[in-house]
Image (cartoon, rainbow, N blue to C red; front, side, top):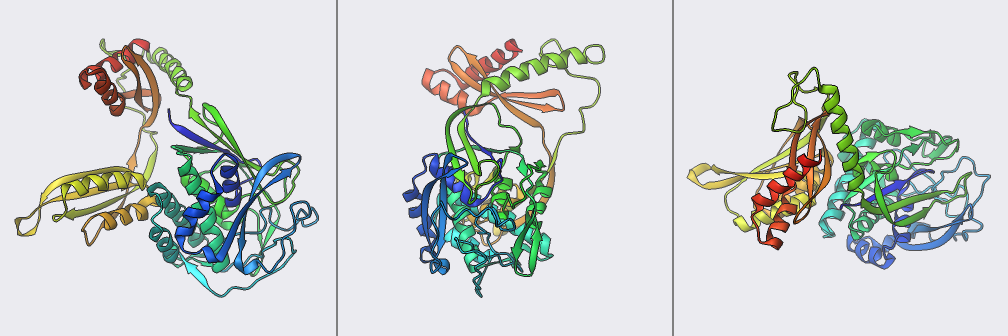
Length: 478
């Protein structure tokens, strides 16, 4: 079973709420501090957590005390909540600072403003992350989140993502929130991420040149790009920060209701103020309930078969409908990046390691092909396919782990089939089956290689026999 996380966001999402929920769920704060120290910016902040109450419910509040703000004495949790500040941001006004924006920092002192002249551009932030030698998934996720955030800000301001710059304090805050969240999710060994629909909030938030309407432009851009379902919960506050929204849009497999799952732990991350409903992000951690989805899919297959009778035909050796008409043309189309480079001076053993590192960095597929290069030298053509938000992370892996001096990038469109995992029981054990559909028509059924290989090794039988039995079990069941 896959270990999954569901982010339930009734009062929105922010980076500090994500980390608070992760710590509440069991991620050690000392571990986060130790790994974040690798970034080399530990002199700019102090980290702490506190158990607080939001509408009588206890949750964990995560604080980034910035060195530039430490001269402001924070109030305790009982007095920091000021319901009269109707125009202040919900999340302690701790936005990362973007090009052309400068938010105030309200660590208990209303409207206290601090000017900062130094800025960090996206390439500098990426270099900080890459140089830290973080766990591979953490590096890949963090780079992807910052890339998506810069894409949104760049689109809003009409500048390339590489020119987006973050004010010093805001950049520190955003780096901690983003990298810290990725560290916590990696420590929990989460495989898939799901998020609830997002509340829009309302009102305004203070910026350098006046006030911005809520939701802010960057958040709106991210919602638009990823077709995030939104709704109004009637709270006139800023509920979704750009940092939190970028984390969600980068990691989410989908937005909406929770998937079928066995809940094993709950993490509660507190926002900064009391609201009409508990200002808490609820992190559900558990295992994906494959049995439920498999049962539902069997029913779907039966219904499809009944609908297809009379206008289709069944082949005697299949258990799913094959129609005379063409397959539906409504399969989703997605944008991918293809990275290619040719290599002629690297050990084949290193190529194998590159495969693993690229998959950890977010690659969808990696493959090589033998080629003949100049001067008749034998080499390999290395190709990696990934979503655009992971292209920088995958490119960094190729440069770091191979001898190449250049990588070609191309952006392509690909049509994909809907896939779901079902589980069947064979006489030797359980095997997961990948079922691919075009519309409601099943077009491919394949047992998972690793499941078959593990059973073959344990039971000392051939892989082909396990594969055959798994397919037979699926067909017999449907």
